[in-house]
Structures are given as C-alpha cells and as structure tokens.
Length: 118
Image (tube, rainbow, N blue to C red):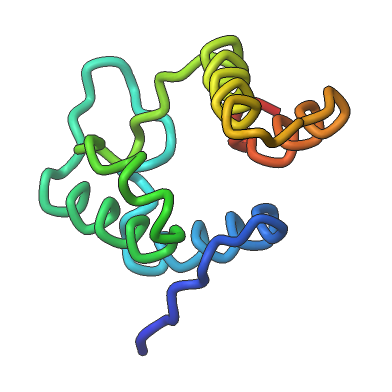
C-alpha cells in the first residue's frame, strides 16, 4: 500500500502534521524525527528517506529555506531567532513599500510557528 504525501499549506498545519506523522510511522520513518536518547544515532538510510519525504510535503518556496538540512529532526531555531527572522522579513517588505501592521506580524508569527514552539 502506498500513501499520498499531503501538501503543507498556510492553513492546514495541524491536520498536515497528524497525517505526516501517521504516514511516516507506517513507513517506519517517524523514529528519525521524534526525540532521541542522548547519543543515539538514527539509521542513516531512514533519516535520508524521512528528509526526502518531508521535502515532498512542503511548498516549493520552503524548500530553499530547508535545503541545508541533512537530518529530519533539525529544528535548532529558538522562538527569539524565529521572531527576529520574521521582523527582518517585515523590514524588507517595508523597504519595498508594503506596510505590515503589528497585528499582522503577530498573526503571521503564530500561524507560521512550528508546533514544537507552541
């Protein structure tokens, strides 16, 4: 049996995450993503398969942001770093003539934050 990889959109993260976890678990890949014991190394082949799976499930505009990842568990960014990055993007948008209100910034921050931050 094969499973169709659901595509991540701006509004479907909670459902997408459940589906992706379920499918990756069915393929025996979820163990490369979930927390590991200190010093425990994942199976290299499964790790590459999980990463390839995740690249199929994300929008093309996110692929370049994640291109440097070599491990599907990589998520070393803190909330402060994430907020700083979003603020930098807002500054660039203002430089192009697009005004982003603070309310919009907070909404975008909360909407785009990885589940582990919440």
